[in-house]
Length: 483
Image 1 (cartoon, rainbow, N blue to C red):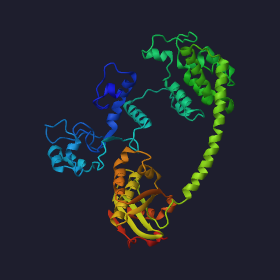
Image 2 (tube, one colour; image 1 turned 180 degrees about the vertical axis):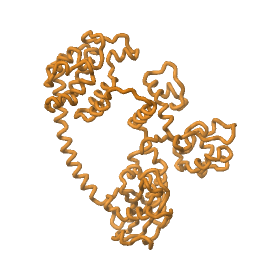
Image 3 (spheres, rainbow, N blue to C red; image 1 turned 90 degrees about the vertical axis):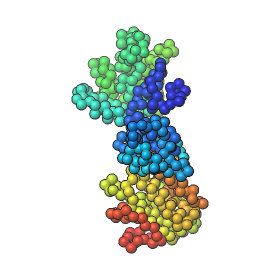
Image 4 (cartoon, rainbow, N blue to C red; image 1 turned 60 degrees about the vertical axis):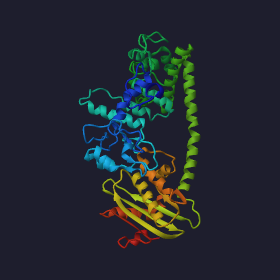
């Protein structure tokens, strides 16, 4: 796609292509959602245009505002950085940028590791885009636009119930597509001008709808008649797809049909769809009784296969619980530092705390009350970074750091990648270069109580401060961190 559609450009900025593919047209149509909600993050600044890209952080990210009418459209952010020190060239920024944007730019930090510019998606904690968050955002905006929605029967409950069925994910997705009208029946292809004939190839019916394929086509009707699921005349199967699915999900149970008899119905629907496709594309007409046998056998096999993983999960869970209770592996006499942060929505500050151990003796304690961070995870990262800098200043060169935040540990060890945490992880990585021996370990929350008390005590104070010494400050209760 890059070679054909945006070889020398950015996919977010490229114009409409000549004779594009269906896949590219779909992506290009959805880019407006990304453009409005992505925030540019500054690394070395080489890929970000000052006056066109949305890199100024606000509720809705935007380009910088020029100081005068004449601007250089090719000016990139790296032109505003002194590359020897990787700091902002403030005199140049004040010459070119409006005063209200100067402080916002200087508050950002260019990458000292000279990483490339990136993007952060505003609607996830990690800053990475997910299909779910994009889908929820589009639906939210759609609801806001529809000031007076049309009153009609809702299929939301049907779609929601589909995801709780005990079947494979592939079949759940197929059933959701069926209810959403996304299954490629002949009538759907005709409506989208992808075909000229909407009749059913298998039985010759005038209109091959999704409901026709799954319930009304003669092979489908025979399959349902051969199944153990009751077929009350006029109720099931009927001419309405939603009513048929509703009957299989709820109404049949209300009429006394046992749960065990209804369990195979997702597989029956799936194999009816496969049987129809096999006839159209391969010319093989699978008899209804074989379709039913395949569906029930597959349902039974899947049900049996779920038994072994459950036992294995219980065993693994017990082992993991024992591991969580064990202390992190430590060398005898090793210097270790436990860190923690305290963060709440209602407070305007964040509390940081650490305690340094030499063997079993407490060597240093640190407390800090700082500005509010974006999230608890940002606070945990700030606590680790600050503790590393303070301990290095005190002359310690080989330290094992311990945190009760498993998510932070994954980011530091690069097991996960969160675009919104790039700056914090980069600070930790740079600080680690100053140690001869550096490691990070997970410690259970119950074994990190002293650092936790220090962080909470720091947050409880009104003014911002930073305190590091070999003993606790006089205003702090010694009893709260007793051995």
